[in-house]
Length: 138
Image (cartoon, rainbow, N blue to C red; front, side, top):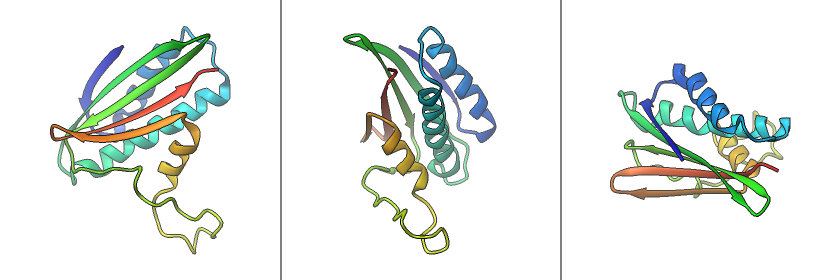
């Protein structure tokens, strides 16, 4: 397990992705899985940067690990912030059958995270949002 605490600033997204890439480097993962993880991590990190602190400066703690589940490596990453409580899981998914003009703004990124991970959880504990994704690397 590795941890990283950093300012919740969008311009640090590349640092977050490179940090994750370093952890995943020893594992043979498909290009598709690699891209899916990048999309999920980008969505969750940028949402914290944009919304958690209401425009004020804040921090995010990242905790990531890869464990074996039988013969399959499983990636887990948690995003922890002290921003406004927000449970992304309970919000209604956007109706993707509607055109972009007909849909309400928001929600597509979280829907992508839900569809591209094996597990997506949230809890608010001790004044912190804890959002966790789990993805099999096979």
